[in-house]
Length: 82
Image (cartoon, rainbow, N blue to C red; front, side, top):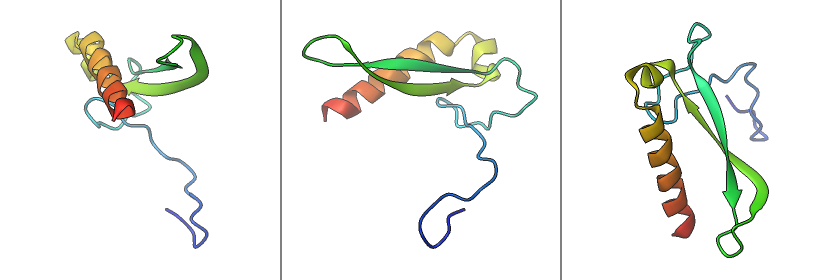
């Protein structure tokens, strides 16, 4: 929810899985958030910034978290190039 100034005023904003868009509930003890460093394409050195990706326990339980993270990073890289 936003006020007239455009500031977010909600007390709690739940996280969502970056791959499935499922809400990450407090009972989901297997969910993780992974920060991936942003790398300068010309020098190959980290810029100090990072992108956060949250994965729910369901994806990790199915054994698809490595594929999901790889695909999310690839999609983010394609967006940055365009």
